[in-house]
Length: 323
Image 1: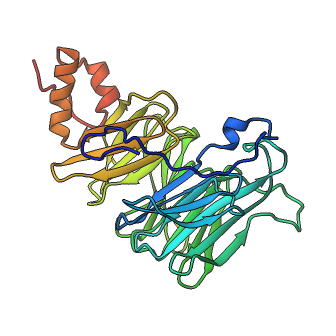
Image 2: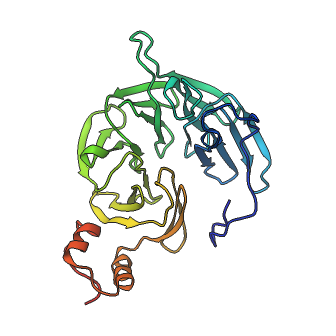
Image 3: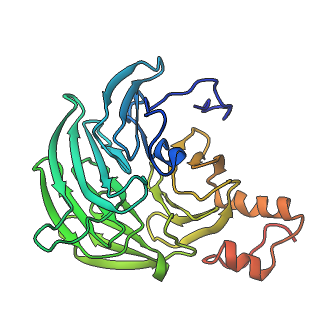
């Protein structure tokens, strides 16, 4: 855990265990890896899970254990913005390797007041004998009325939370999902095409598409709370799009990571900055585009070349802040 104001690491850890000792799996370190993490919108509790079934909920800031289960495999989890529901998307591995093929896969929607499941959707098509798809990501709409999930086998499903039913399903490759701030549209990142697809969030109708550079299988998308920006991570960098037009504002900003950015969280501050958390880094990002240009001069010690400008600020007219 880290102090939000200083980014200083606190001498305190929370554990998902207990784990078997000795560990019988092929890769013990992967077996114990935290794969899903979320904080309740009011900051009162932290939820964490792993692929092998450990699900824990602690109160904040006293770190008291509130809820514990050992039968909820979760590659992904998300808490609804109103704090009422938890969605877990997990699979049971077909062998002893946590990242191996799936023997079963399911989405579970939980009522956080009662901490009980209220809806389950099984992703195994037993009629066709198909292999269950492995989970990729989960996203709630800002009004908490809708939740969307995607898998590695090109399965996208969207659900009505209150009515506990599926709204629609699409066969599409989407490595990341995000609802627009008003909740009427759903965005999906398609890595091979470097494209963001946009659908009607209720019907699944295709609406438009936007270009985004460097989209990859580990890319993640988040809108800022005010909806002004859409942030997308790449393996070791970050791209920022205008949240309204989906035009690129700044592209491929390097992040000081030791690994790929396959975890992603945002926290706003009062001074126009954004705290970006990835798998191995916490970065304080200034969200003023003009200051990005000024920073480029300071870091490079010169004006950006036209080639550099096209890479980092591809939608802007060439206008370096320093001469």
